[in-house]
Image (tube, rainbow, N blue to C red; front, side, top):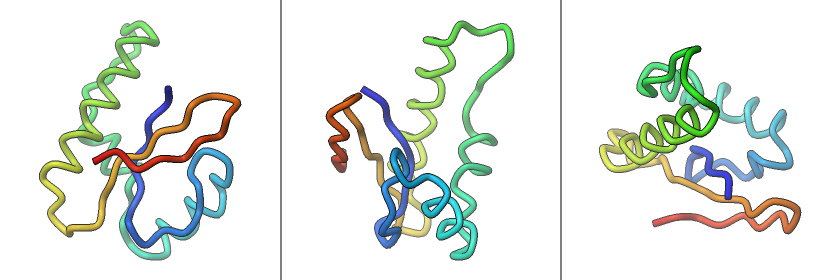
Length: 87
């Protein structure tokens, strides 16, 4: 299961409509991916699974702190293209 960071007002699915999602996020001034990159403790020498875990931990931290009250964690379950909000 994949997880991503998004905002409550972004109408686009970051898994299947990434370009539209990204454009909305940047225009709104959230810069979610840049913030995620700053908070995630990812290094080149980490395994893919450790990098994924570090990114998910950073998403959880952003959603927990939620300084602007807009961020949420969403999941997608592979080919099923399920798009769910994680509380």
